Image 1 (cartoon, rainbow, N blue to C red):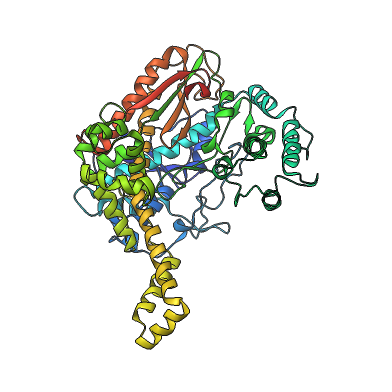
Image 2: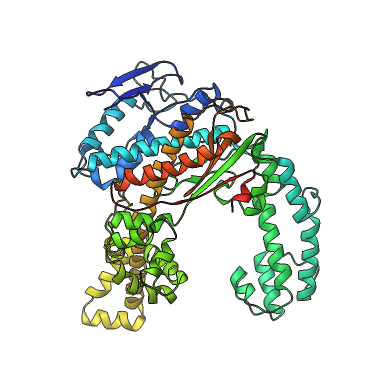
Length: 570
């Protein structure tokens, strides 16, 4: 059991220690939301070893099927259910200090916000975990809550440290692609040239605005181009002089909009890009971002992610993470063997299940995401025969979703139940089925009964696809959280740098994580420690695999590159 330091005052001050019965472990800082407290501690040069984020844990436990029978899960919604994430903010020192949450008046509350009793919430959460169903239920949830809270620490630290970013390199990239920086409200020169080419190819008037999709589509159809949409795939299959300049215009427009000069002015300060991660922002437990588009950094601008002098970037990504997680979840030894030490898709081909690597990839994606047409429909039966445990697991998850049931990840994160539209569609189909002979004839003649049944089938299949993927993607997110937590711990144990970098304390001379994207991390490391960091990142992946799957022999190989700038890693 752990000693929980529960914050009831200012960060680092006025806290009380709530000691749970049992042998003490290192102190676990406990707070309502990591982003409310940790940024100020980091700004002071401090660092927290372990934490328990009550808001994140509350969300997990309120939904987890493992604790559905506990008073915690059955309680009416309260103020903890209404908490929204606190944004990391551009500068934690400038964000207003929270009022009313921990500064309680004589009656236990304040005019600004309802009182949240952090010690009572902690006790309730611990009791819920202890009451989880199954012999391994409490352990699974403890691991999940610890990993989720560790992820919150990592997210706050990456925001604080920032991604090393060369604004001059970024500006040069934009100038090379777009031309000189335009005045506000004007297009860059290269885009203006493409607009002229598009108008000429379509014989369109000078008023045609390619940024207006309705106007552009109308002009394409008027010119006889014969496309029904502006999707890249459809345009690439079209033989017309407008296609090349239009595709190039769309590419440059995306660059300007997503990562142009406005983005650079907004998000890069003092040589660092600081995004706002939202831990658990996706229902499966994956992260989201609330600013800066960190989860969609295009290859073009990754050349601006440059390590500080005397430092390197260690970039690592987990190969084919989700199918490997599926093999571990299902304890499918044949699939685990196919992925041993290398390319899992090539291993599936070597097993004789399918003829080509492309078929193996398409089939596995179809199994995990519900592909039922094309090559996926042809290949899936072969995979089901070769790997019955793995394919059977996702099929059962899909069937549970189609019945409106909840599915759960390895560590205990459960899917939400389908919403009102799903139930309304099912009710409509049942009503059509239950209609009497006369009513049925009328409904059939009007087309309402088939429509209702088709709608119900559509909703049913859609929710089955969601639950099919939930168990795999959610468990992969759990693996990634455990990987992050292990990397974070290992990096802090490394020696300090011979040459400090430009990151703020406490990371100026410390190896630190700077970027995370689902199954990929970027570590900013002193050059002399880069090889050691690569080894630690690999060891952390092995540790995460053991933590989730025990002795089951599923490998999680990494592709690791030590580079000066991010684009070199891909």
